[in-house]
Length: 595
Image (cartoon, rainbow, N blue to C red; front, side):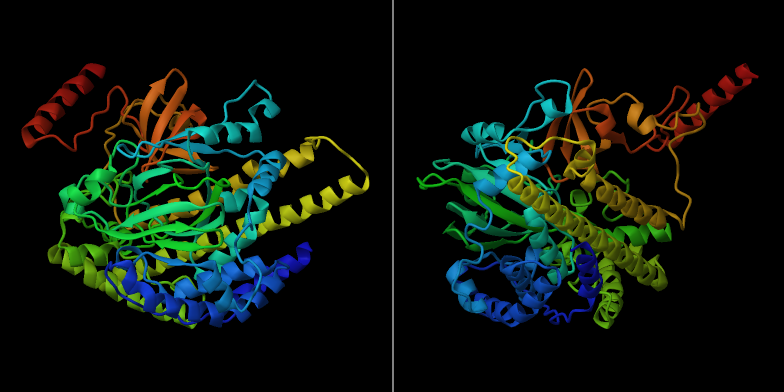
């Protein structure tokens, strides 16, 4: 099977893509989306034969083909981000579009699948808070029972117990859970965008299963079991609170209470619906939403959230502009947020005129990462577009950047995006292969009448997802660092270190941490920007860039991003001319004493 899969992996980029359609729209009431959903269903129908061909190449099934067709339709007809609009597709309509009688997504992933995934692997999960007056916070489901590897493994019984207190969340599940890998690969190949799957499990009768919040991703929800009630609102005006990240509202300490959405923030209720098994819901990035199972007295609700990660991986015009200014050595006096660790979605960007802000926060065009003539053509359009938007933001700043820099930066961002796309594909293919191996092992165990838990051999331990996935997240981190280094390569950046003692090579993982430190922290095997929120002995709590939080991390799971100032070092960047002159005189005196 593995050679066949590898061959399919090489052939997939050559499958014909439906040409992308650029649609621009503002948020509207759900009744106005009927015509758009008809267009989407027609695109899904047109994509289904190609989806079956794709699935056959990988030895996958009809469900994976259905995911490919669904996301092909979304790619070719659905505006993303602030130009998007929420909508619902019922499974019956999806069945008609694909001309199938059987369930498409209903029951495709259930509690039995989840139990098998937890028992067969070493997985992590979080439990979400349920107070709709406060920001959404999460806590770990599992607590190690001892010092051994087996004692640290999360048990399915812990997942069941945690369900009584809130929604259970499995992040990056498409990389860790083999059954989901094919669906995740289908999404990536159909959209040509990095994508991740999270699983959300909620018990019945939960009045609030997720408090109001926004996400950085454009979210496609696929309800596989049970029912869940959703309310989706238009985005709040970010100029009302410029210090808040509009793509991470209602998370951690940023409260987005339900009562304030309409009364104080002027958000409109765009869509209210109860998803049945097999239904699909689209929520654009930055659109507040909240969920419940209060009226559902049946089975546990399970839904898969597919996140199109454009903002997460710098695939928007705001990030492209930022890289170009750095490459040109131009200080961003218009928007600020010039440090690596600064959140580019807060501050002056939120106070721009709405039309400029929407342009700036737009995702780069779908199809840009395709290795095709269309992708090359979109590259030229993207370079021209980012220069145009940047001049709308601040003409003086943009005029200091040579046209070739805009072109070079667009090409380099595209290169990084293509690298990230291939890493994601490799990661999901590896999970599919692992799933095939485990299926073969299960057949052997059944034939040999072997009962009881599987023995954790060294060879099997090496194949666990926590180790397998980490290698790919390391590659993702390397690619992102290379992009950042490239953006800085054209200029000599000022340093806040004026010549103190040398730091040890491992300072990023060993130097003392304090509350408020800007770091990168381990989340599912990859390091993402975060801030230290609590220090308790040798354990640390952090808040990630998108508002999520993690508690009880080891020091080895947190990386400082800025070298600490040593004993004889001072950050002079904020000094007035008089203060700087006085400080230099003091340094001269110190140096004379040392001599």
